[in-house]
Every structure is written in C-alpha cells, then in structure tokens.
Amino acid sequence: MSKGNKSKIDNLGRVVIPKSIRKALGIEQNDEISMYVEDNKLIISKGFKSCSLCGNTEVNYQLNDKLLCKSCVEGIKGL
Image 1 (spheres, rainbow, N blue to C red):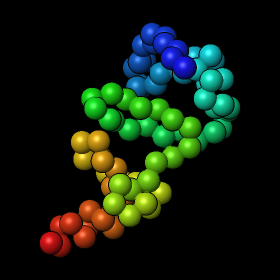
Image 2 (image 1 turned 180 degrees about the horizontal axis):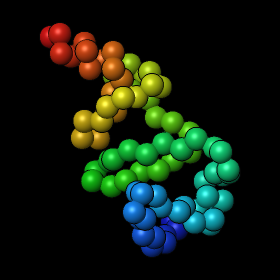
Image 3 (image 1 turned 45 degrees about the vertical axis):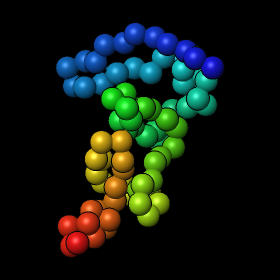
C-alpha cells in the first residue's frame, strides 16, 4: 500500500501526519511513534525501534541507518 501527501514543517519543527496515513498505520491519539533515518529517508512508524546491536528499546543514538543504545556506544568506545 502506498499513500502520499505533501506537508510543511512549521517553525517549531512539527508536521501533521494526515488522517489517511494515520488510519492506514492504525495510529491514534497518544500512540507512540518512532522516527529514524534509513537510506536518506525519514521513516515514521507506529511503536518504537530497538538498538541494532543488542535489541534494547531505549535508543539514544543513530549512526547512518543504525540505531544504538547508550550501553552499546559505550562498549564500542572501550574497544
């Protein structure tokens, strides 16, 4: 399924997700969404993403298209 709309970002960095897209994703008021960059695209999905290395759901960093938690970043620094 492919849906598309144009939208502008306001002066506070906000953008409205159109009702048709929210409905297609099953997103309702107060639901959590996840935003990340993949292949130079902004990906918005319902729910959350996890660390690419350990699966931790508390993601603090993004390196290119990889999401990383603080613990894994600290572990990499210690190598």
